[in-house]
Amino acid sequence: MITQLQSDVETLARPSGRPVGSPGHLAAKQYLLGRLESLGLQDYLGGSFELPYAAGGTQFTNLVASLPGSGSAGGALLLGAHYDTCGRTPGADDNAAAVAIVLETARILKLAGCKRNVVIALFDAEEPPYFLGPAMGSVHFYHHQKTAKIDCAFILDLVGHDVPMPGLENLLFITGMESHPDLAEVLMSTPENDRLRTAPTLNEYVGDMSDHHVFRTQGVPYLFFSCGHWPHYHQLTDTADRLNYQKMRATAQLLAAIVSAADRQGLAKPAPAYDSTPAELLLMNRALGSWLPGRGMRVLENRADISALAARLRTVGL
Image (cartoon, rainbow, N blue to C red):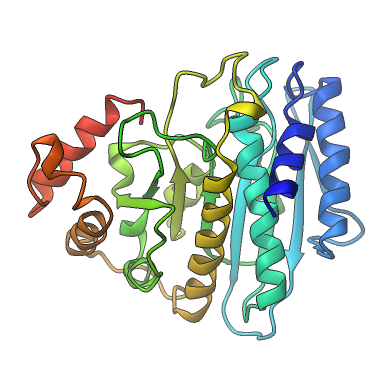
């Protein structure tokens, strides 16, 4: 499915960008409506995948679909990514790659089947000047369009590029495991993938970079997936030819496995406070243990070691 991933990105990543209200934004919306229909998904509210809303005299549209589960217990799981761009930039990595991966993950999950309903949400208005404000698509969805409880949200942003650090090109950061102890079990049960290194750690090392913000602040368990910033972030050079489609395919496969594992877990009960450090140490050493010694770092043993590594990785743009 690399061809479909690349086709989605190339179609969305127009040179003129997809800022809200632009012709590119409208074209992206129409294309994504067709893709949601082609996957055989159901509309979320009834009648259309489009969930329009207005704020400050501007019109916006969240695109939301549903993959019905086979069971009736528990709330829904949500897969989300924003489809607008920061100004008139192509936005291949930010955020066409994430949208393409969400669509591919939905395809995989539809074939595999889930007990819970899975919401596929392509959010509008994530970029400035709407970022973290009431018009932000994910914020508006949560407060005004959500029809049922969300047991866990899986949000993607900046997931198409190689991490610009020798030996860690295939790294994928995952934050939010601390939001529910069941997520530690979910991540630890996911098989290793030799094409993708994962570094699960605290969201506080990264901050609310994207649409996971509203879920975190509302106490909803979540995982946020990102490869961090890179030199082409919010630049005219953020083009489809710079992405790693093999890595994107591996990310979609990983995400499908994680969602399936979460579907089997509890997650419906309120999250008690817990220390995610032991799980972080296990997972980060599993992914980075062979890389650390060659960079003058020891195997991670405690929170201070994780914090030191996070500080080092932030120098490459996380």
